[in-house]
Image (cartoon, rainbow, N blue to C red; front, side):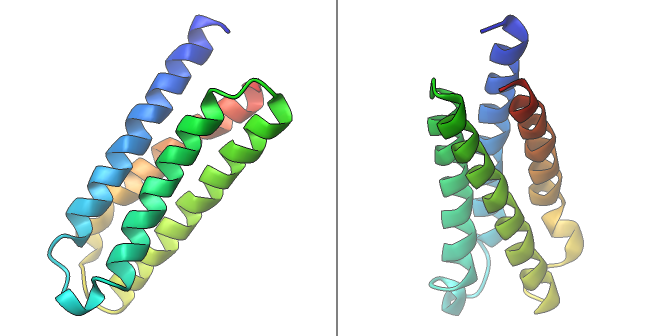
Length: 118
């Protein structure tokens, strides 16, 4: 494994962890009745994406590794869609979601690079 790949893995790990934190911050002040709805779903999806990435990054078999990385990538799409719903139902303003959306974008870009290298 080259230095470039190691650096890429570290960046993805760092940004996916940042995404978990950003999702928790975004959903922190939502109404209590959303605790079992969108809040749980967004937080769970962010944590699932992070843990799936961590697990997938360190696998040796390329086919299995790509499966895990694609699964994480799909979860980023789910988080993005759920955040859009928060905006649509006026639970948050669009500008409040920028950290989450920007971090998802960075994670996707880094993941694409890693998938190409795998």
